[in-house]
Amino acid sequence: MIFRQNLRTFAAMKQYGTILIVDDNPSILTAMRYLLDGTFERIVTLEQPDGILKTMAQEETDIVLLDMNFTLGVNSGQEGLFWLRAIRKQHPHIPVVLLTAYADVSIAVKGLKSGAADFITKPWDNDELVRKLKDVLDMQSEVVSLDEVEREHIRRTIDRCHGNLSQAAELLGITRQTLYNKMKRL
Image (cartoon, rainbow, N blue to C red; front, side, top):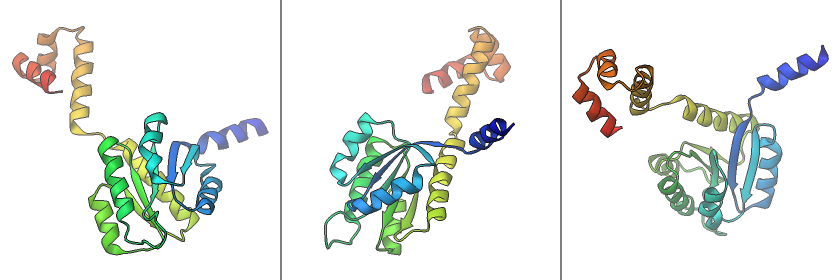
């Protein structure tokens, strides 16, 4: 009986995949590891951003938590924006959440315009940080492009018709030529 209750409790706790945390402060990385241990299956940390792209090429990464400043005495956020753009260029589907001790609205706006999924300031509220990361990942998994929906619908319809494109086009309510065109585009 107790085993079943524990199993249900464990199943109700959703664990997310891999998070890459990049921050030059080892204490921040340690705190994040403790905080996010029950939320993520795997936590990868880097103290310097120059290893981000190599790490992401080797590790299946679901989300990146990226500090904005890495050079002592520099608080412009430009380093974080540079690495945000690099990540987005190489891995456009992986969300990046920015993290900084210097909350500046203009930097947050630049980060969001450059493709950041969200922005968190240090010191952070633990519950708020975990909620934001979960929200970003949940939104990522819920949103499907219209092209993807159409592609999947066409594929299922063709499978259902055992490859008969004339029959699939008829079921889809389009001409065979339109189906061919959609198949080329998708």
